Image 1 (tube, rainbow, N blue to C red):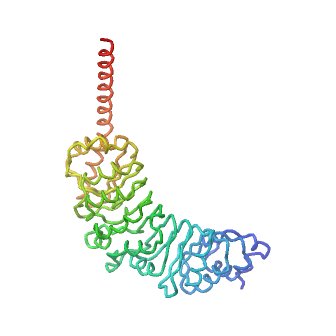
Image 2 (tube, rainbow, N blue to C red):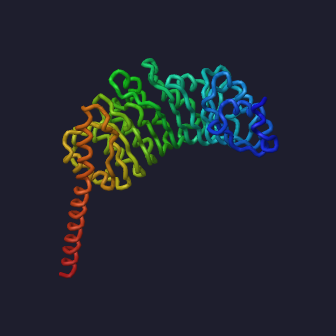
Image 3 (cartoon, helix red, strand yellow):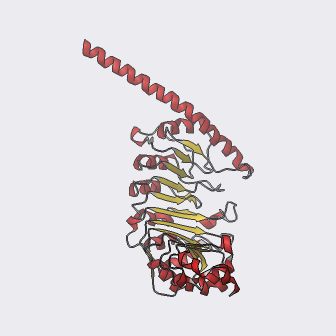
Length: 371
């Protein structure tokens, strides 16, 4: 009870933010016991609380009705159900080992849900229905070789949505990306695993940059482009240097450029050694300003620069390869940096050629008109 003296009684009714960064976990638990005295509390942050604090924190949550942001550790089912019912809630981070209660409906516009691993999420999704526009699933740990992304992960996620077409933003993020050969397969997905995502037709933001999409092929990329034409930002495996050759090629990149006309950022892990013929004009997308290639395979930077200068003339190229990355990736890093250097030159020459051709064509038309 001595901790409660840190919070004068006259301040509690006006308290709006409670965070352990300033008071520590024990004080948060103490104030949690006074939740009914803090009716205006909008942000409750206690993310590092121990399991022994779960009851006190859960009781606090049940007594708070104005929450906009809830970032906690262990939370029981009653508290989660109460939080889910709040129309004011915009951000939710929590940890829960199992849900044995009836299905919980999460209906606020924006959820950030934190869990130890993808398998933890897979279990959690059995008892949840979403009706939300933005969803971030964040995995805090991914060190156990047995913690793999389940083959039916996205299928179960799709089943959680009453109206999957209403989801605008989806992100699955890992705190630690498993790059090495011994662990990257834990987040390796193929086209069958990704297929359920095609039901989220309203997406304008899809971020799976931390997932190894090496087995996603050009056919699925075209299906994504046709199913989700409103995409503005798309990331598929572009934040990891994966020790595997990807199935996707320039053909898939062209499909996304052609059908997703609102794209401004495209991040993709693909095989840039397979050079296609120059794309058709209807595939050119001047709206793409950021092209993130991750650690994509490449062997001829000049040819790649020539194709990209036509396909996405306003884009800057970037990769994810660090100086500390394995030696095998350093040559790939140098090649993509060469592409970025040559791209501006190719675009400039191409634009000059188009302008000159247009001027000559107009002059010929005017000459014929006079004659």
